[in-house]
Length: 145
Length: 338
Image (tube, rainbow over all chains, first blue to last red; front, top):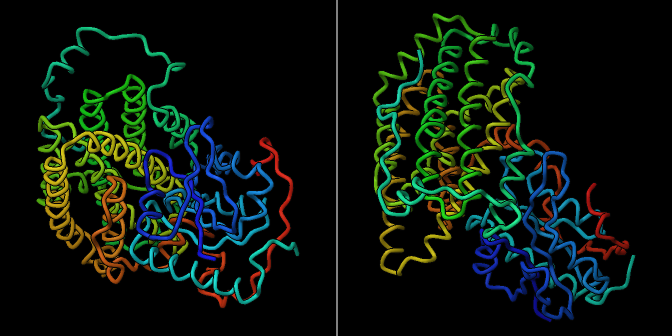
């Protein structure tokens, strides 16, 4: 089974540009709340930008919350990568912390805006390693702890 | 005495759209949003609102006294330079971009940006009146006015704001918001990483957050207009952006030397400039230009910028074999704010 990413990107397209450069198969969570999401039927890593207020509220875009309110989507998520801007201090990439805690998946990686070439390499290699390790453990189907 | 800007008036309306706007203004309707980003950024900026009085700057008096004369002089000079940039954005940058706005809500957001730049400029004076002698501050303003690199920086940006091309003006504005400020922002982060002027650093962090939203938003509006341009125009604009960045960069290197050579920090500041120049390009939707080897900002500065951000282990650099699937919790819509 090949790696799969699911991502959200607002019209600023920062996350979209990163995912495009990764060259890993990816499905985009629609911006319009009315638009249906592509079917997700295998494990994936979520890539999510951060929109937190100062107190950390509203960190996760409502489109991503809607997506994760579907239990099947939560079951298939194996980790989260989050983006943001270090200028926001403690709240940098905070969406990853929220999703990681809420859905009990590892927070895999953080990057800023649309990512540097180092981020591209790190994520590519990391995702590959993650999938290899899951194949070896035979745990690509969800089993719970 | 105040930081001077050569041209005080925004350029006259340069096209029919601008002229139209002046002859007829429609009441803004926030219940009919054409671009969701306008409302999103308005909400972000208004929830970020702050005033310098919120920060207990006087707690830094003792710390200020522990700096050497050179260090104090450097700090005041850095802050007068930042004051000039904020003043430019307040009185020319944001008002000029307002004339180019596509939606009424964009104009409203830019009016918020203009005002916050005035708050930023005002904040540096609060720092001065709390920590410094008037005479030292006057000397620093004089230094800034006479520093050729500070003046060239201001001239380069002002020249772009006077062009008749809304996209080029946005490029210049993003470079100011996301690149030019950082030769200055470096210093309070440096002091903060050494436990000095920590309240001043808290105030600067508020400014740094605002500038991130400004650069993001103006960059986003640039990208929207860029999408509409022909491939030929796009190539021309990209070349234009890179060439302006290089002009600003060359000048910024010299400005940095003129400030930081005395305290031996120039090399460190350069890295911070490369790192932020990449982020400015990303805000415009372009790929970063500066390779990671010259963007290796010291971890202490990164930690001063975003404390705790690097505490999480980097999962990808671990062995990965310990991966254990967690059990997902139930989630509800309302349940997502921790």
